[in-house]
Image (tube, rainbow, N blue to C red; front, side, top):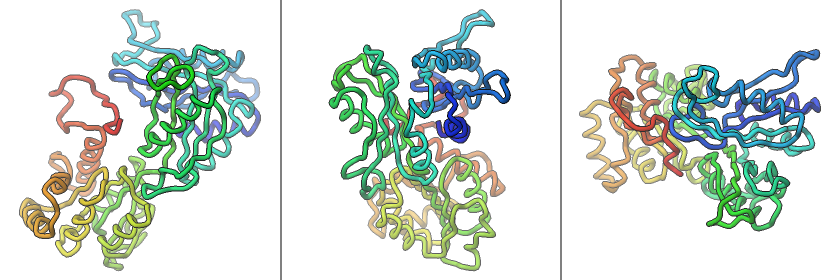
Length: 392
């Protein structure tokens, strides 16, 4: 929903009803991840309904458009599975061989009165999860939703002491079970369909609930205000990270030199990282790129970063710099198991030369680390192409 939120809000605020199809589960090589959404809203001046967004990259959009238009009229939500297309060129399906479960519902001020507040949370970077019943033996429960917000945050900036919940899924047991599980998914920024018994039984089935997590953007901390950092900040922002460039030298750490960074900080890297960790402003999704290749800067910050539970820690430098850096980190007492988490020299072997090419190399390694990719050419590998999140 995040990708189509602006358009959805415009229609919602104007009092229009919108058909929304959301990918709630994928199998095999599905082209769009859970949470991808498509809207069917009213056209201008009596024109046919218009479509915004995508659930499959074009394979089943026509069928979802028709179904969403129908759901707007009937008000009855539908869970539809789209599988592999056959040899008939007019058959609805995915030519990539994947399978999608798409939940289509009517969204308006009556069915989703909390949408405006949810949008405000997302815009402000406040964590919020929306849990929707997409399958249930009781049709009256289908489409019910919860909005779950942490009431106060712990060290990871998401886990709460007690959540604030609005809405109901029909029974207290189901509501409580989904609330607990949604908070766990929200911690990792994961959107996923969960299965329960009709009354929230953990070992049951028959009830499926899609949890859409809107966590704050994950952070990318780039240490070293060099030309490679500018390119890395640019690609990091493109990937959806909130990018900070930090360097102890004020003459280099300027916003003018790094227009794609969300913030530029003048401080010693290890001191800044320690302060952010103590303040709870980094978590298990944070990536750290140390581009200083100067031991007085990179060894202290790497010593700290490797002791934290971060998604990725990489450091730039030659093979000789890498060997010297490892020796210094060993002398500093960094355990071998923690040293093994260091990506150094940073990036995948793409033959990169320019700062922009190097940034692509770094970004590729970060993506591979996130999803468990091998970094090998797809032409030389087998099995499924799109992998599930490693944290699940």
